[in-house]
Image (tube, rainbow, N blue to C red; front, side, top):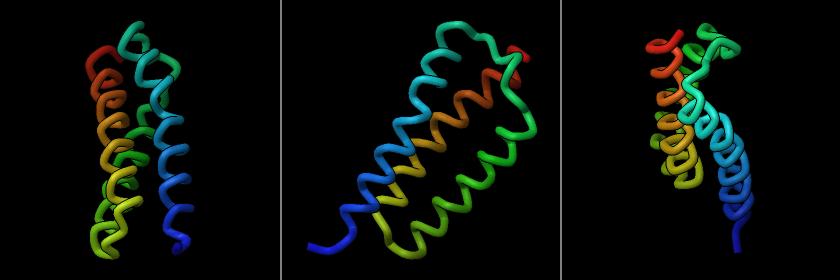
Length: 83
C-alpha cells in the first residue's frame, strides 16, 4: 500500500473543515465577519491547487480541491451578494 492514503485522509479532513462555515453561511446569510480579500485570494489559490493536482494526476488533490472550491465559491458568492 502506498502513502496515497495519507493524501486521502488529509484531503477529507481539510475539506470537511469548510462544511460548518458553508452551512452556517447558508443558514444565516450573515457574511459580515468574513474577509472578502481573504476569500478571493483563497479561492484563486484553490484553483491553482486543483490545476496542480490535475497536472500530477493526484486524485486526493483533485477531489478535495473540487469540493473545497465549491464550498469556497458558495461562501464567496454569499459574501458578494449579502455583504
